[in-house]
Length: 156
Image (cartoon, rainbow, N blue to C red):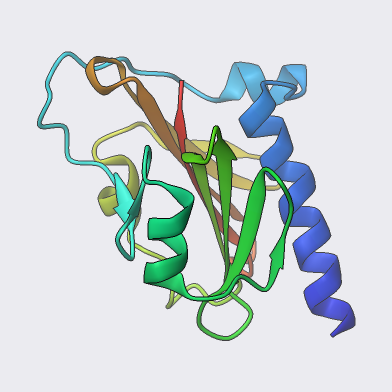
């Protein structure tokens, strides 16, 4: 339980940086954004039927009752200690954040960010793909020992 709490807190801290653009200078310079003109870019656009713009009621009918909720977000337990956090704006999905504690449960990098360049960081690796025509971006981060993989799909 204590590990789950620590992982959840770490997930929320890291994800808030990505969601609200408050990343540190080193993270900003190490993430390469590649705007795409193609509408058929192969990236992760949804997870388990949850996608950007979906209404809150549709999320709940697909995922069931959330583990935790607030006015602007809901947490859903996935496999094991894996977690999905759905963020809302006007009751529509604004961002989807996934955290996987077991690398075998995480989607493949190519499935998430397509051909985006992977950047090696001191504490892990990351990649980000911007799909400008569809007004969203998707990113993936994995720590060095692969015990945490985070995926974020967000409106721009």
